[in-house]
Length: 314
Length: 66
Image 1: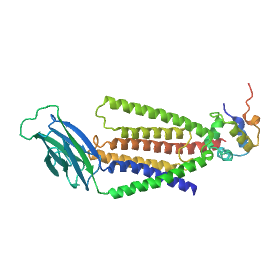
Image 2: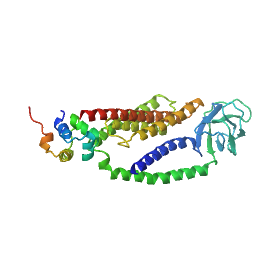
Image 3: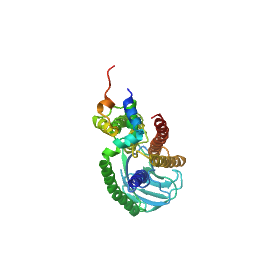
Image 4: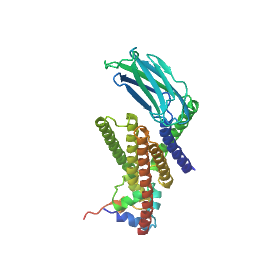
């Protein structure tokens, strides 16, 4: 019974981890974008690519703050920048509300261009227009809030239960050699995490257009460190999760990895690579989970053979 | 250095590594590592093994100087 509860807890935790990664990407409303656009850049387009908006309704309020003499023209299109705009407006120092827009294609493009109200040529005078874009989406807001609330309510006692059971079975769960091996695994994971963080930091300094935010870099770093710990501990027989019947856990990890990979591949296929940054996180997640799963399966099979051989010897 | 005394004491009682591991509350891999000499157990674990096999510390873990 206890084993079943443990299996259920790990499956639920894995699901929550995976869902949180997916929900984080798909559901992200009420975004604020602030851009100061120099006047000499006659045309500027921003792409809202962090939501998958197909079939959803959303709206924008765009605040224009700049010199009176410039008239801003705003076009909103979906699918591609050149597609027929679903919204068009012009204004000077005003707030434009788009109302609810039905989005029927991937990505939303908001294009800004501006010209002088007297039709003269634009001269770079070092002036800027500040556009503040607020995206709102009422669709699914209630469901999202309920889901988030439920996840938090479910996660808190679950985590408390996991911590309690780990501490309760601390001595029975792992023997002294395994605890020592886990200590080494923690150290390995720590240095790999440190190294990954340094490398990502340096790469982001070298490359100006690294398609990763600090948040995504942190997730990737965490996943690589976590995978290092699990693999390192498991190789030294200081298993992670289960001592016996580890195959279900390996399968859960494998499934999570494959799902992440499928989501990433779908993203690539839809041409989201480079713009939808979560794909890189999903790829790293997939690689980590598949690596852990593969290691656990290989280790389980090898252990069984080894165990049979040692029993024969003894 | 391999601990052949432990291995023979275990075999004399017709216990597998898993049986002994269950008796002393460690993993089979730990017993295997002790027998192979890959791991030095704490005195607590040594005593548990001795009690499980009905031997003294000297009989199982004392190494004669060559």
